[in-house]
Length: 611
Ligand SMILES: [Zn+2]
Ligand SMILES: [Zn+2]
Image (cartoon, rainbow, N blue to C red; front, side, top):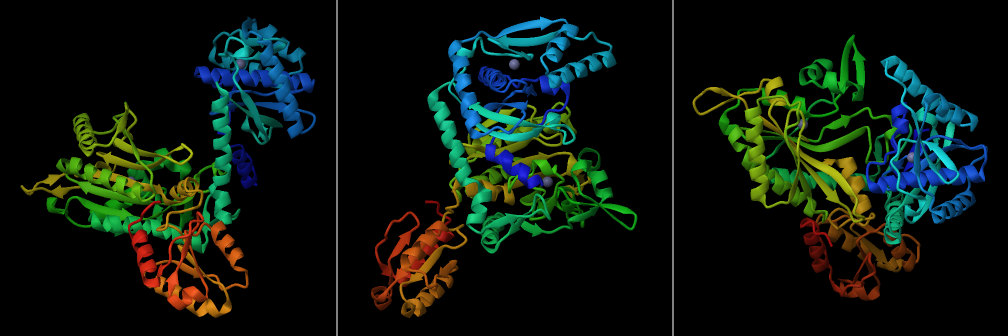
């Protein structure tokens, strides 16, 4: 059932967190001028709905990212025609340029006002506030309402000065939403809209939204036969052969980079005793997100992260300063118990793998190690043609560990960022409680920003809680620093992001099928197999389309699968042993001998070129 709800929410493409408490319900989400305009549009929409459908009971109508919504209890479901009618009424109200006027009513009068108008949800919010005031022994505040033209709403504001200030808008969709996010309460109809200061911005937003739908990785996952999702394991992908090829290709590229950089790969158990999480601190802070499993009266959990387990390998023997940096990488399967209602495709999952590593260094090695890591990040993102952006999060107020060490670590990170020549933002107090960190974001082809990778310089959690040491030059025990780093981040999420970024047309090195050889007639089939074999011998992933389809159909099929190269073989090509490749973009390339063609593709693939 959860999948249905997800599809609905994602169809809308607007983020709308649930609001349960009276305070949340009264938060208009209007924290900027743009948001105040969006929330004002919600009032105007409620005015139009009440006008068209007398007796409508009103829920709430806050501003959200890119737009607004309002929840309504109506006698029947709204249709697309209704939305057009509502839009028309809204346009009238905006043209009338009604002023938004705030008024305060004594609490009893405020409650009576909404009760008389048949608005039980508004009355419920006021009753909740009254109960809260009584509990806390504070006086019930006056009822704040905003009025424009014929419409009055319970509201704390803020609003724009008048309806005329509301820019070009469009209603987008209707979805079901439980009152107060509670499945036991009535299901209301949530109407989503978007509004922008200019027609141009509205147009751009609607274009981005349309593109995002076309590029939706769940849709492309089915179309390209990459992965699927099933109710028997919510929040986990079933990887089909082509999707798994993509997955392993990414993983192996990172393995190759890591081998060059002196990493060693480890693997630790997914099922671990509660004791470990008590020691790491996750038991107190993170238990609700862990899947727990009972066995022989003991409690275990599926690991939500790899971090603490790597310390058991570090501690398996005495470490000398000469062994550091010790770079341990791990592709561990992680499980996090996210609410089923928040799961979505590959980007919000319960089951995933990160390209994780824990690097143990001496304090004097922090700077050079970070420089190396920034280089890794830049290299890996060049493989997918994305430019990473860096954000440096410094010491939060409630930080663990020696402030002097924090200061030193922060200075080293800053120096490493500066000398790497990367641009970065500083986010004060945004570090983890145990570590300053560098977060990495990318902007995709639609200008959407994604948080992917992270580098954390851990002074406390692993080194102190797991009592790690190394022996220095003088033979005395010293505390190492642990660096947590993931470059793709979650492979699942990364694949979701790049699938949408490339709209499924992956660069050659990542494409699950890199070329299709298309024999024109049956008599060309043996030659097609020979060419494919020659290409496979160079490590390329090649298919032969030996079906009965006509040649044009075979080409169309390969194009729909976004295969980078198609090679059609007829009498002439077989005779001359040449290939005249055609790209998925429709470009016809000049004929070249089979070996030269295979060598060219193998080089392009090995170099991980992005067109
Ligand atoms: Zn309002
Ligand atoms: Zn870690």
